[in-house]
Image 1 (cartoon, one colour):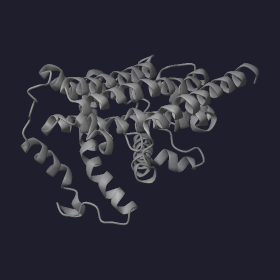
Image 2 (cartoon, helix red, strand yellow):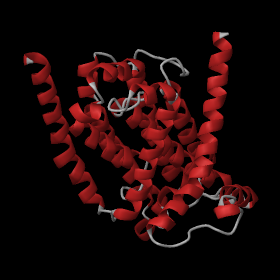
Image 3 (cartoon, one colour):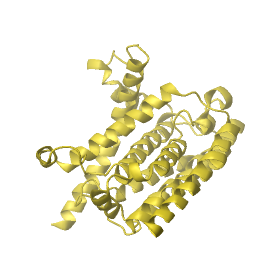
Length: 325
């Protein structure tokens, strides 16, 4: 029975991740249209919801071209790698106390490992394309992701110090006793949020694909479903980062403690999890419309000169509180 449950959770996660990524294509454009006082997609189906299906059909109908001057094997492997690493990251996400694929005692390290492996896909995509714009985009991406991976890992160490575990289930259970970590680890939350945006190449930190500077960055030579896989990987990354923010800083499946027990008992835990994750996704999307893209040197300086000291200060304060209080 336990094996059947894990099997259903795995397939539910796969179908849910792919379905959510497809819907996010429409939802992002619709929400940005509302934010900017315009209609957004409204031609295909009610409220334009058929746009996701139309985009898939369009990508499937396009020529799946491999440039003759490219490294064929690397060029084909790159877009699949980013999707695989993002899907593997969902293996340790706990939807409720008993609903997850794997409760690893190193779950947090596993998540960081999967997100760091994603850098190879964009770097290989840039190198394998044998195109100067793609190469510049790939190198930018490697430097950006490696740098912000450091800040992302350090921002979570305060959470690990308080909970005493790398297990994501244990981290959520600790928040049931001590309150959500977004309060006690606010600096860590801010750094993780910024690093998550940079890791997923979302605006305003989409420097590896900056259209105005690099044509399309490491996407330049890609078309058809190979390009679609890169886009799918970006949306999966957005969902994964939002799920992790919910799990680590907003109590995962736990409802807000200020609500009456009647409400907390009535609403299923998985609803709280998806509601918080959806709110984080909306924040990421609206951030795209609110903040302009910085220069590349400004992005790197922001990380090393501001985020890194902030994480170190957070660790010092957390360690001092745990030691003396």
